[in-house]
Image 1 (tube, rainbow, N blue to C red):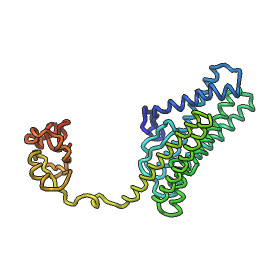
Image 2: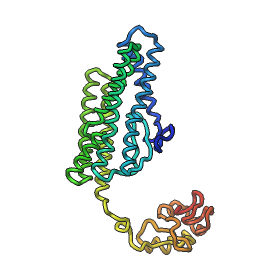
Image 3: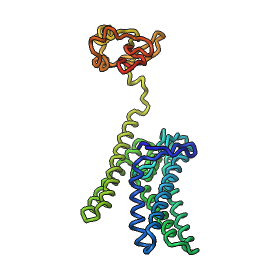
Length: 332
């Protein structure tokens, strides 16, 4: 999920926000300000409900950021670089630039997020009880108690053993530790994710049919997202397992046929295309170093009248094969 705008860096990790955060923030704020808070704490000014809803929404997203930042910090401590954290419609995601290399590291990275959410749930719950004990306004107490509840829900939901949830990562680490096979572990967690996703879809559709409306459809949408994400993780795990240990040399053509950068396209067609059964050729400079590639699709896209004049000129020349020229260059 890409960021729409950037908040800055925390502990060296870039933090961004996707536009879809506006949707869930609005749902939370309106739901609290127009629903939960007036129902539980009636006869207060409308502005008080709106202010309480806004504060609760902001602190909730700060809690999500703390959850994801915990993943990022522990990942970095276990040798896994972290590209960024992005908050979006379904919460947040820490984009790792690698994978943990041991089951223990995988477990620690996955488990710390729900652990932080549980700690936050306890802190907010105790804060609410303390505020109530000292006679604070009931609406303020309600905000603290809601934050405790929502963080507890976040932690419990994320602990469901189904990828891509944190519980799925924990399941992956345990199966990996037990079997020694990371690919098998990842596929197991992905299968669990697909089953859980379909379960949520079924429950959500059932709730919607029974009259819950938007709540059921929202649950079904979450299930659909989990199912698609789990399928993607399974495909990635299978591909990674297949390609593990395979070197570039094992999949490339040995001693590839190269084309000098000064070759005209006409000459390239006559001497290379018809003589060799390749779709792409490396282009080399005078020193023999690669400077680009030329593919048959590039040649086909060039008007025949230009082929005799198109040569391997220097940088900036639009007719160069494999150079850095403009959009008419071949093999750029």
